[in-house]
Amino acid sequence: MKNLTDEFNINIENPTYEEVVDYEAFSNKPLLEELRNKIIQNLIDNHINSTKNLDEFIKTEIDKTLEGYDISNVERSYLYNLIDNEINGFGPITELMEDKSITEIMVNGPDEIYIELDGKVVRDRSVSFINDDHIVRTIQRMIQPLGRTIDLANPMVDARLEDGSRLNAVIPPLAIHGPVLTIRKFKEELANIDDFLRSGTLTPYMARFLEACVQAKLNMIICGGTGSGKTTLLNVLSSFIGNDERIITIEDAAELRLKQNHVISLETRLVNYEGQGEVTIRDLVINSLRMRPDRIIVGEVRGKEAFDMLQAMNTGHTGSLTTMHANSSYDALNRLETMILMAGMEIPIKALREYIENAIDIVVEVERLGDGRRRVTNISEIVGFKDDVIELKRIFGFTQTGLLDNGEVKGEFILEDYIPKVYGKIKSHGIDSLKDIFENR
Image (cartoon, rainbow, N blue to C red; front, side, top):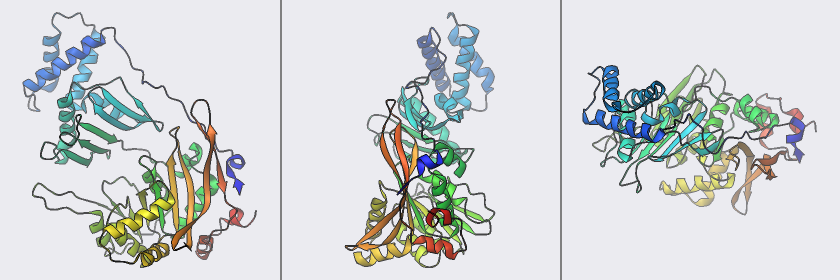
């Protein structure tokens, strides 16, 4: 076993962030919020629409509302920006949507808004909604250009916004305590392997090994919990695919952004108002096999499509990549079994496990640790069976060794004293860049 952290001087320090986001406070902030709410309500009562001169209308409404109040020009400008955001932007969360350092926005209630920043979830007290109806109106305004709606008949929506951000909203009666809005922001600048190395997500040895696995067309699963960075890692690994290959990506909401020349992106479709027209991940996986793919990349496997994905891997479509929600590598394999059995496939469990063992080469486990930083905590290969259960052998790993006083996680990356079976497959593809890792040590 070899400690990689010291050798490569990986920086695993966690940046700090204040518990409460600071913002410019006015001495009469409560009054400004009261006036904002009054102006917004006037706009709603007057059924403001795009046929009016919005700029002049907003100024007129603000002037009428502020008569008799001692409001400075700075505060008046502040109010105008809030109302402008309400009509031309995303309401109170407009500035959060524009802030590139924020990766996720979570609205749990009118004055209960959280953001993810530097991997940590903190409460943002700088913005608020008037009430639950205000949240619902904001959601409706965000999804209306997409041809979607949210109401009592359709109390849940999952959609991709025009900028690529992923929106999920749930309202009563499904959301018991009021509407809930979650937005995973679209990143204009894609993470790359160098970003992972700088942030200490993995080591150079691990990066080179994963690159070789992709280039050798090994079938790989990336597993981890919610928000652990599975899709980001999938996007980075996909960048190692050759530019001469035909790649088909399949997702619920298109988040992968491959830069190769020959990429076909497929996206699922929900049922329409008549309960028809649904196109599932499974439908797209089955159809992709007729499209002469060199690679099939499924954003996330979580249902009946698992069997079709394994079929593709076992019938010549090597180099396939996908992600799964699972807390560990073994849990990912167990979930694969469960998903296939729940799909109604009448396959003996032993035969099913042999099918999985033949299809999957590498399982990569990624985790968001307690300090918010993301780590590749395990890279394992399937090596056969032990007591009729699929056996995994760890190649690389990350072990937590403690916590600092400020909550930062201490740990070390490990290279196991083991030459993986897949190393032979990698060398058979003419890739000899891993000799110093597995032979010369």
